[in-house]
Length: 104
Length: 409
Image (cartoon, rainbow over the protein chains, first blue to last red):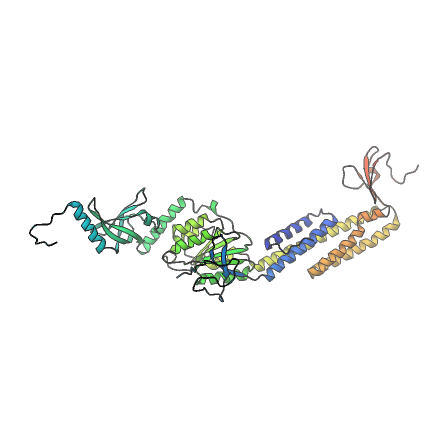
């Protein structure tokens, strides 16, 4: 059983399409046909789950640090720009020199 | 320096010119001058020379290379402008001139003219060439929004992106979208995003405004950043009627920020429907496959030479039919059940596999090099090589004779 939980939506959809097309060709042996069918069902379910569970992540890109890594922090009404420009929230990268660049 | 001194003060030319220069530079250190451009010429060195004039007089002006490079507009003879700078005297030539540090078109007509000039220039450089347009991703996973953090544009985009495609991560990249330095910062953001991996598409824009408000999106520096971006770009400036240079350079132009959000992501509900279609096709394909399997089993039953096992096969066939029907009904209900029944049916089908028939002493024969079974004595001729598949192993045989009915020897 291949694990499809790590697949992106696009990948899972592509595999679902491939499974359907393989099955529609109709020349598969027994084992293969059922395997492709089951895979197709799994990819379908994965796609549906991604669509239903998705919760939008919104981040603010503050800067790119000296290692070329993005300095990010959560963005939203609850996260106004800090006056000092320093990052308070944890992002993928700790903010060292995030300057506030809010427009005037 | 008295006019009534006994001995008149006599200056050398260079002295008086230097004095005039000092006087001009202190008295007119920052002046705005309004006029019309004539004799506009950019020298190979990068400096720009021109004359400012009105209906009665004219004044020489120069823009040094450094400032010339930072001009937000393109100028030509006849344009009404407002120039800022200081007056000085060119000592060697004894001419005075305006050292211009800022030059702005005056009035809507001049702005439009400046815009048109830049557009022509960029078009010649291939910036609007459709061959350079990159396709947008079907299902972007990370979308960058280059716009003002406070604007309605950002709110609109976030709202629509969240509704249509919450699977994507949004990166808000705040920039000033108007005023001094806005264009530079927008361009810098676009370039910065291009140093980062994993960004599938970016929207660059702002809400509506006057031509002056939208001007940052008409500047060459922004056009260049968009043109160089390897990340696909969507411009979203102002309202439907507003066209900026950025709109022509970006890979896609959206009439408004809201439309940009609709362009870059699919609608979750439509995708859901498409998924349902794929699921239905999956079921249909399996049904077709099962039907085909059933038919081949029927053929197997008909070709069975003895009657007793045939009855057993008929039973099994019926079971397959029932299972298939159940399977397909389940498919219309819930996928969870369906998956389980598929497995169940798979086991059932397996017992019907020809290989299981072989277990009971039957065999399959086919001509060497062919994939279909030999079903009739007429299909082979003496001398043909045939293979016979037994439950365990295969025998290679040569046909001595073939005839209808049983061998009598």
